[in-house]
Length: 181
Image (cartoon, rainbow, N blue to C red; front, side):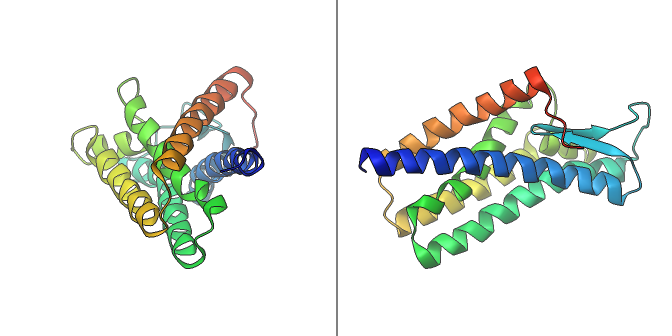
C-alpha cells in the first residue's frame, strides 16, 4: 500500500470510527426516547437525563441492546458490500464494529457495558453475550478478509489503528463530553 493510499485508508478509518461510535450511541438514545424516557448521548455513552429513574429489567435489556444491535447490523451490511465490491477502503466499516465490541468486552471487567448488562439481566455470565457478539463480528472480518485477500499486514495495521482510535474516542469523550443531545 502506497503512502498516499495508506493515508487515505487511515482518514477513512477515523471517519468510520466516529460514525460507528456516533450511530451506536444514537441507537441507545433512540431506544430510550421510544420507550418514553428523556435521554442524551455523547460519542461514547448514552444515558437518561434524570439519573434517579430506575428502568425495568426489560427496558434495560432493550436500551442496552440497541447500540450493539446497530453495530452488528453495520457489520453485516458492510460484510455484504465488501463481498460484492471488494473495496478495501470500506473495510474499516466492518473492522471497527469488531474492535469496538472487543474493547467493550475487555471493559466489562471495570463496569458492565451493553452486552455485559444484558448477560447479567438474563442471569448469564458477564461475558456470555459479549463473546457471542465479538465472535460473530470476528467471523465476518475473517471471512471477508480471506475472500477479498486482505493481507495480514493490512489486518495488523487496521487492528492497531482501530485500537488507537478506540482509546482516543474513549479518552476524548471522558475529557470533553461532547453531548449531541
